[in-house]
Each structure stands twice: as C-alpha cells, then as structure tokens.
Length: 486
Length: 96
Image 1 (cartoon, each protein chain N blue to C red):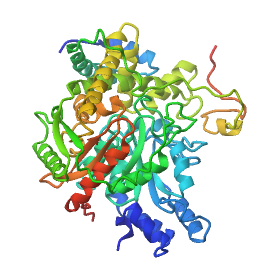
Image 2 (image 1 turned 120 degrees about the horizontal axis):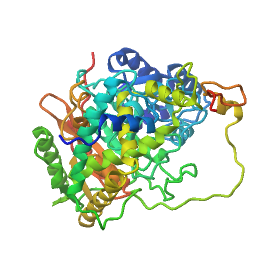
Image 3 (image 1 turned 135 degrees about the horizontal axis):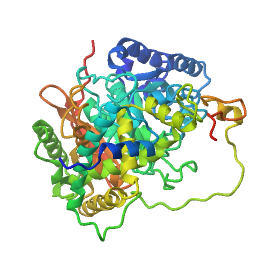
Image 4 (image 1 turned 90 degrees about the vertical axis):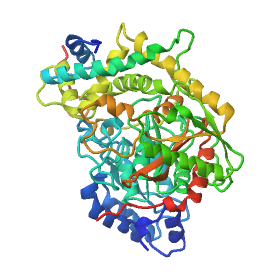
C-alpha cells in the first residue's frame, strides 16, 4: 500500500486505527516530493522540516488525531494564501520576501483542524493566468504529460494532488482557477459560492470574484475540506452569515429525479471534439443514474469573456495599487524621489501579464472610458447572472464542460493573451454570477489527457453539486487513474 | 484592426498606473491592448440601456461593528516587511 496514493478520508481511517503514524504519512509525501517535484515544480516554498516536526508532535500525543478528519493530514496551500511566518509570494517578484505576520482565516481553520502543511504551491503571478506559466519563478508541469501546462492559476495545487505530492490542497478561483486546473490534471476542484468562504488573508486579485476552494483526489475529500473552510468570518464583510450544512451527509443520496440542464451554448464550434463527446457521455451516465436531462439556454454565455476581462482587471488595477514599495514588497534601490520609486519598483516587481491587466484595468476605469467599458461590463454581468437564475427555475443544476480543450502545450498560448483569455469561456460566467461549480474527472482524450465535467448549482448549493459529483464518481470507478511518473 | 488606443495613450495610462514601460514594452502593450479592446466591442451587440449594473453577485449589506479596540499588529510586526524603516516609521524618498 502506498500512503501517498490514498485520499484524505482513507488516510484518516488508518490514522485513527493507529495503523500508521502521522510521521509515516508525512514522510511518504516528502519522499515523493523529493523524487518528483524537481520535474513538476509544484512547490514554491516547501515546509518539510515544519511538517515533520508537527507530525512528530502528533505521534507523541500532543495533537488529537480524532479532532477532525483533517488531523495529521498533509496538505498543500496555494501561495496566494497568507500563512504566519511563511513566505507568501503569489509567485511574484514583488512579494519575493514577504512574510505575513498573520494567518488567513482558511489557514487558521485548517490549523485548528490539525492539518499539516507540506508547502506553498506555484501559481500564475497574482492568480492571473490559465496555465501557471505566468509564475515569476518556474512553470509547473502537468503530471500526465510533462510538456503540457497543468492549467491555472492554481496549477501547482492541482498538479500536486494529481501527482500524489500532497493528500489535498487549497486553490483560489477568480474566473476558473480551481476548476480548470482540476480538469487539466484529472482531479476534483470546487469553487464555492461567492461569500461562502472567508477571503481574509487571500491576497486580493478581483475582490468581487475571488473564492478559495479545495482541490482533492475525490469528491468526499472536497466535501471534508469545504466543511472546514466554509462559514461566516467577521474579518471578511463579504462572507455570508448562513448556516453551513454537513456536506458529507448528503453525498450518498441518489440523484434520481433531479433535473439536470445542459446549456447548449457550452457545446460550441471550435471546441475539442473529444471534450464534447466525453462530456456528453458523462451526461448520459447521469441520465442512467435516474436524473432527468433537459437542454437549457444561457444566451449571454458568449459575452462572458469580454465582461470578465474588463471587470477583473479593473478590480485588479485597484487592488494592486498597494504594491508601492513602502510597507512591504520589493523596492528599487537608490530611487531619489517618490514617484520614481513607485514606478520603478512596480515595473521591476510585476511580470508582463500582471502589468497588462493593471494597464487594461486602469484604462477601463479612466475618465471617458468608464461607461463604455466598466459600466457596460457590469450590466452584462447582470444579464449573465440572470441567465443562470432563469435556468435554475427550470432545472436543479447544470452539466457542462470545464474547458473547450484538454491541457495545452507549454508555450502554446503565451504570445497571444487574447487566445489564453478565450480558453476560460466555460468557467468565467459562473464566476461572474457568483454560483458554485465543481470539476470532476469524466474521461481521457485519446492522447490520455484528463477531461473534467463541470457541475454548476444555484448560490449556496455546494451540497447539491457535491452530491451529483459524488454519485457520478461512484458510478464511474473505471475513470479513476493516476499519472505514471518516473 | 481599428485603433482603440494609441502609443501616447498607453504611455499616459502607464503613468496613471504608476508603471514605467520601456519602448519595446510600450509597442507590444499598445498592440495587445488594441487587440483585447477590439474584442470587447462584442459587448456593444447588447442593448443594456435598461439593465442595472451588478457589482456583487450576491446580495451584500454594509456591515458595521462596535467601535471597540481589539487586537492588531504591534509596531514591530507592522514594520517587519518594510523595505526601509527606522523601527518607528516607514522610510521613503523625500516627498517635498
């Protein structure tokens, strides 16, 4: 038995029966990281010593392994989340030496639950990107094909789960950054409803869109992790004060009689034919499980990319104004006056995609252009949100592809930012609408690249999409497979 | 392709954004922003004159709290990440 191949809930069973020690579990993952991360580049800051210390303390009886299903479980955390005393870079040069003096709420919750952190994972700089190629440090590779991207921006977190370099991880999703890398790497990724999880301690990209969520080996693990991170937090005034249901309790319930909508705008010309056929096959599986399938329309889908790439950069340009070389972050040496110091520090500290988005955002918010771009995009956002609300009046949840293509080659889209943006076409609308979505593996292309099924639900119905994903996963055990690494 | 933004405008926006672009960066940025902004024209296919704007996807209300002192960072912690400080203040280049 390979401990690194087990899910969180499987490891938890072994730990509480004392069949393995926490040190055994942590060591298994550290060995694996040692062996493979040089090729994969999942981690930016490994925390091997701290993880072993913590494991030792557990084994000496200092931590209660019964405390929670995450006690003694080794996790990886996207480097966009603040962890006290641990370098948090956002994969940017501008935060190369930033050591947060506090824990983000999700990190604090995981600590309380007894989770152990193996390290901080690679990402697109400030979570801006769909391939993890925008990391200022190194590109993460897809464990299924080392020449391909793992998706992004949570590429390090997704690849680490797929390659068994952690038991589970946290990512963040602003326009698809959990769901798309989960799909590309063949793992489960859940973006919760906006407001379900506190963003306190999440380095801000686009504040009206950002959400933190789990990336895991199976659906049950996603439910377990969500359980620990969900809930109201007085430190984030946009987190919603609504009761958190028991996400694991409903997983076993059948999906018989559920009405599942297939948005016709999510099967378009130009998408990879195998993605369409594999997702359609997954739809058929849900039908065989007793769900009623109906076609629905989300007529404004095709405007999602344009609206998102106005709104998100606008918010980013404002959020990233804080990196001025004064209170933290990179400062250029020897600048004699303040304005030069600001401009040079920012120009040297930010990578080209971040600069591009700051420029776009500044432009669309500038005098004379605000109405034509930002206001217009915010109105279109209302229409996109309305599409989903209308669809959910007809059906319980939606089934769709996550991305129009499987993982693409490293370097394939880096020269053309617009082409990269267009690859987010199926994940952006749910982000704009604030609804929850999950990616669950549903098959492989003929060149053995994973393809995900996206399940979208109404606001705060994570329980429902988890249940559909779980029932689908249980009905398709033959789709579970792990990449072979040598 | 229609010119949406000129090189001079790109330079002006860079000033607003507190960025400094090199000449080749300016050229590339102008080209890319033109391509992206032309794509955004797609939104004009939609008549939105009667559509309210959405700034948040869920209903949010202002949250207020008691004006009571609670724990916060001490001075040392707050200054720890500063590129330059004298232990009491953040130090920046001369402003005036």
